[in-house]
Image (cartoon, rainbow, N blue to C red; front, side, top):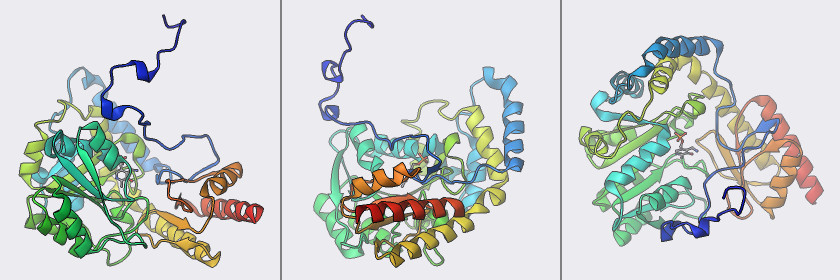
Length: 366
Ligand code: PMP
């Protein structure tokens, strides 16, 4: 049977909504300079590597037992990291913030329910809606990719969603939201308001976090991740902060023992060295600002960024530019916005390589 005929997806009795959809994911290519998934380009420093290895080693003999199902020690440390008076009861953690977002939709979305997001935003939000049987509606952004409080509230009133996704700083645009937008959306909705703050640590001076609003509403959830600023994408650790009742609600859908002992030990060791890991954030912000300036100098249309990446437009056929940049060994991201590409800010040498590759690509084009 295996050697015979390949069975196609179309022959399987999959759910109608999934028919014809594609798996999410940027190309994972082996290139000298990978600036396409907003990872932290800096490897985990030796002192943290040693701490992680020691922590995982200490767990190894006990792997015959299930992990702490409640991940209490880890949630305590995540609460300590966030501050704002949060405690273990406000925190929940899972395998990447993607899993946290999925759990939120399993509880607050689902068949007969609707989620709304302000497109273009993180493309997993609608995909997670699809996977959980939640209907999806697009809210509106302004031409400069900003969202204003009045039009956001109007979109929410019009569609009456059960879950609203706000992404700040927003992927793929880098745009941060004012707290007035979060407050207006909370005021206009009866459902949950999820602020995806995966890139919060890269925000510029004065850009606020929705964590400051948590005490004001039990319908507000802020999600974060260790995949970006903490340089720990491979460990898969995301988390949320919310009212303790939200954490209790998530327990209704979470898989038992979803966070392995290895993951919990790794994340705890990393958090104990948060200062060392987060030391790269300033250097990355410098490269982000350098990329913004350099692309503006080239006459491109650059979206202001509070994240570790930059969206830039004015490219014409962005697919052709993307391919030429790749041919020069630099992988960036085509997020499907005509004329635009997104580049992650990494090391100074990676910025050099990206700008050289882009210049060559644009010259070739012209
Ligand atoms: N939210 C946003 C806005 C993201 O860009 C990403 C990663 N691309 C995630 C969530 C998910 O990250 P992770 O699952 O690694 O925490």
